[in-house]
Amino acid sequence: LVIRLPRSLKVLGLQACPGSWGWVPSGRCARDPLCFRCVSSQRNMITTENGIGTLGISNFAQEALGDVYCSLPEVGTKLNKQDEFGALESVKAASELYSPLSGEVTEINETLGENPGLVNKSCYEVGWLIKMTLSNPSELDELMSEEAYERYIKSTEE
Amino acid sequence: MRQPAVRLVRLGRVPYAELLGLQDRWLRRLQAEPGTEAPSGTEAGALLLCEPAGPVYTAGLRGGLTPEETARLRALGAEVRVTGRGGLATFHGPGQLLCHPVLDLRRLGLRLRMHVAALEACAVRLCELQGLQGARARSPPYTGVWLDDRKICAIGVRCGRHITSHGLALNCSTDLTWFEHIVPCGLVGTGVTSLSKELQRHVTVDEVMPPFLVAFKEIYKCTLISEDSPN
Image (tube, chains in turn cyan, green):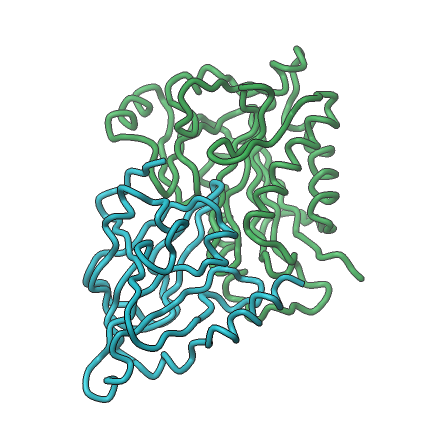
């Protein structure tokens, strides 16, 4: 299925980057499966310049959602942590996406316009959503480790 | 264990814009409430029900209506609105039961996909209670409730911060010719139907309301609290 994104929508994606990464819940609820994997390529350099974060959805989320369509913000959009920055749609339910970090959107994954299935097929590699600068890199400390995320998901399945 | 409570808000026959306005007020109210654990007795949200007073076509978050189509539909005397719900284009009008549950999914222990499945189950159950067998939900992209290849109930939902909005539209005695001017939900080659058409008698929104509420309580495992007028 190919979706036609309105002109104002862009797709953001995740790219696999070297560097440390973490998990963060997009919402405040333990049962929210929509968590992001954030990869920062320059986490070790946060004292000298902002890093670039790449956001997408987790494998757990893409499995929970099934086929998804994405709507994403314009490059240049400034986001504060918890700001709504777009939506994912599946089974005729459109879910708002909230930014786990503060910064500015630098790139969105245009390939998702042609191939939205990438979000499901490759959520950690080419199915990324957005890239953004990190204006407050200390927010990365609030991300979960992979182990914590796995525990978090298990706790929501009770 | 006490069941969660949902506020029942029956608007009767009102313009679609009024339903949207009330929906927005409930959304703001629920999104402002903190915490995932509500004290027992607090409502998990509101069940907004109405019958649209006039014809209106709506598009979803992904669109579904071109500017040309919009102009053409307005020329027919219908309103055209864009919403933030999932799904593409559909029609709402007199004779249709429009149900917008504005629910805090956390308080009901529901995932979004389960909420969509529950909405479909309500429509299927309602059909059964009206004596109509064979209604079934179908998987994406055919989300909705069908009798063979005729859709009797459309679904389109939005969720932000775990609060849902929009919901389902069930054709009771809808004038189905309004659907001929669009490709409903973007599904070329499918049909639409109504309870009246299937049961070969005039079935009103008022008639289906009580069994619909029974189905909703059963499926969402909640109680419904009436109020005399919307807040």
